[in-house]
Image (cartoon, rainbow, N blue to C red):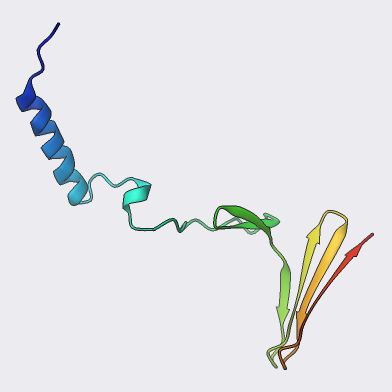
Length: 96
């Protein structure tokens, strides 16, 4: 069996620790993102990633009075989400 050179092992660990503390070695989990991804889903995808899950992306139209309408297509079904300026929310789903 070979003997372990403890001096070399300790020096390597100290060097790795210093490199990590000064930002030379920074894996994704050590960057302080706390699970949030900085990467945006491309515009031509029909979904976006939220908390690691796929969420269908809709086409939202916002009016100047604060009301909006969003249309989400999922296969043959269309989900319409609407909210009036007064805050009334309505969601309808139509499958052909």
